[in-house]
Structures are given as C-alpha cells and as structure tokens.
Length: 311
Image (cartoon, rainbow, N blue to C red; front, side, top):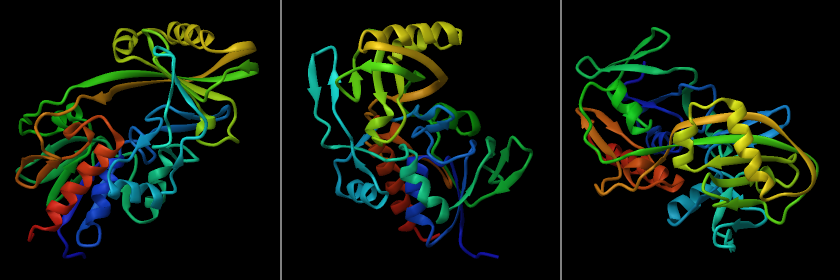
C-alpha cells in the first residue's frame, strides 16, 4: 500500500494531464475521466468516414515549457494554409501546432505513464469526509482533489461555493465528408459568415487523411441552435460550406458535436489555478485565457505548488 499522499484529478484533458505529470513521481496520482478516452476538449473521433476533429483544431505555444511539451508529444506545424474570409487575408500558421492523429493524440502517450480510470463521472464531492461519488455508485477517498473540468461542472459537484469570473460560450461542431471533386484553396477558413466561425480539413493534421471537414458555428449561433434538430443544423452548415467550395461534390454528414462549455473568457483574477478549500483545487484554461497553452500552464502551476508543499 502506498504511503504517498493520494491525489485524485478529475478529467484527462490538457490541464489534468499536465498537472499529473508534475506530480506522479512524488504522489499517488489517479485520474478519473468521464469519457472513454483521453483529451477532453482536444476531441477527435475516428469514424468509418475518416477522422473528425470536433474540439480544438490547433494550438499555439508562447512559452518555452509548452513548446518543449509539444515537441515531446510529437506535435507538428499546421499543414497547408488558413484564410480569414471576413478580412480576405491569409492567416499565418507557422506558430500553429497540430498532431498527426488529432489533437487528442498530444496526450495519448501518457496513457502508459499515468493511472487513468475511464468511464468514471464524478457526481458529488464530500469535502469533509474527502470522498468522491461516481455515477457508477463507486466512492473513492482522497487526500487532495483537483478538478480540471470546466468551472460550471466543477461547481455542480463541490459543496463549497467557488467564486470566479469565468464564463463559457457553447459551440456546435458539424463533421462532414466531401465526396466528388470540390475545389478550394486553403486547408482552413475562419470567420466565414455571421454563423460559421471555422471550417477545417483533416488534411492540415495529416495530408493522407480522407476528405473530411469540421465546421464550428460561432458562439452566438451555437447558443441559438443548440437544441435545434440535426437536420436544421446540417442545412446551415452546408450553406456555409457552399459559400467556400466550388466544383462538383456532395456533402455527407458524419456527426454533430454539441459543446456546452467550449470557449471560456479571459480571466481578470491573475491566478493560474483556483483554491476551493482544504485540499481542493480547480485547474483549466478558464483560470487564465481560452487557449490550450493556458490549460497546460494552469495544470503545471498547481503541480509545482503542491510539489513544493510538505504534505
């Protein structure tokens, strides 16, 4: 039986993995993830039609630490070009990074290093007894609990009130296969119209991928259409694509992904992580700004803080 303090991290996204990597040598670190795979909002799904990147499409790196993490995680530069339709200008992508098998694969190798329990959704945290309840009925004790979930989901399971200025916007993402002979100039398009914020091909991850694209609606349109039928969402997505593509082609659909908490605002609190109570913390991009790198920085910052404490 381990004599190391037991740290449980909820969520196997970027911030949770970064935090765990900062701690696992000195603590008994266990990660509980509600879905069946790693990545969180770095979500890619391999369907019969090909690979679809429904979450973050790429990331940028401004700090040496995150640049090193991306290098060690086999990230590559964005392949091809990106175009801002609204301004009519090419978007520079030399500082944009992706992973050949989808953004989630930046974290996939850490399955072999970390202790991750999948298909475990936390529904309640008893902070006095230091006990987590999962939807399966299982209860797990801890010494330190860390939530890497979006703030609204963190608030749902903690008893202590969490004061923070973070707000979130939703995102509707539509996966499409393009059959036939489409003509387009770029691998990704931004600010297509008032409804469509982004349209990206899987080829900017890997040129060998099939002709699959994901369209992400703007936060305002996503909020308005979140409960609409799949068919209405698909028609709106197709109209946006046909404003971009020429040629003789057919659009077939491979899924709609509804992100309730997709994009956070920039926090004004100047803290890289949130202390909830005795032995309880929360991490994530929402502590800093809406970037993948911010999630990494948040997780590492808490990891370094806890590693420096005498527990």
